[in-house]
Length: 88
Picture (spheres, rainbow, N blue to C red):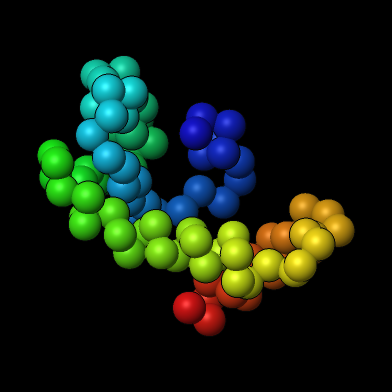
């Protein structure tokens, strides 16, 4: 996360959604989110339905939207994925 967030053009109002795994709920990780002004969001304990919309989005991204044999390079991947997400 540090490498990604320290790139130029930092977005505002970012939310990070996760389950309640120990690495996401640890003090160190929560401090990292606070440092980058990222709003944490966690699924409720024992409720698998909280994450269903994101799971569906990523399933479609992986299986339905990308080219059959993958992208040629990072630039093509970014463009294709951005286009798919904006259309969603």
